[in-house]
Image 1: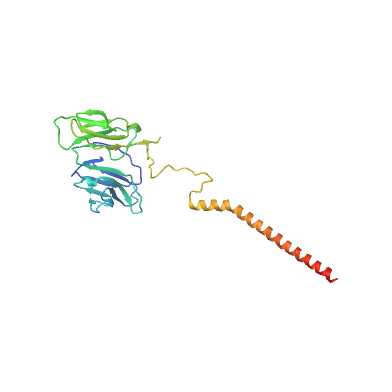
Image 2: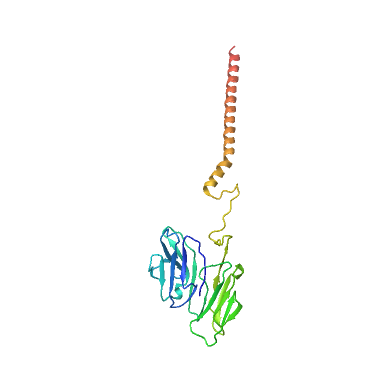
Length: 260
């Protein structure tokens, strides 16, 4: 199954075979592709039982420093995989599912570019005499195939969804999410924003969300009040001094009159 995907990040995690679902005891190769060869990347994963770990830490082997090979995979290997550098930079993330089901959906592991054709495959662990395959999107039937393949022509955002398949009259596969990436006018893929990286926006002028700016804001707002308080204090002090001096002069005048 030929599937095309674009990945314009500093490093890109590739999955071979290019799909997100695997049968138990299958093998999978994960590689970190760095077009600039700017750093060393390691394959990491986060699973429900093992948490966040690096390849060879109890799972997988490394034919090369940026490649991880897993043979005889199990459902416990299901999880999120990515590449990570020593400084903590991360690549795209790929959800991989290993299932005990009798059928799997062969769909691309990476998001597919807008406008491309995408072929979905339905693969049974054992051949069926029926020879028919049904495909579903978001739980609704989208067609059948006698070859086990269905091609989506010129995919767009409306084709995004949860896809699954089944052997006619048999068990249905687990679902896999098909993501579609838009292109800009130059034909390059536009990476979607994620919840962890919301779109950047310019804060209002009066906003002081960063601690340094907040301190500056407080100083700017409080400075006039502080200066006015100091000035009023000085004026009050001068008046008190003048009043005290006047009282003393008055007392001396009275004493002089009595003496005369």
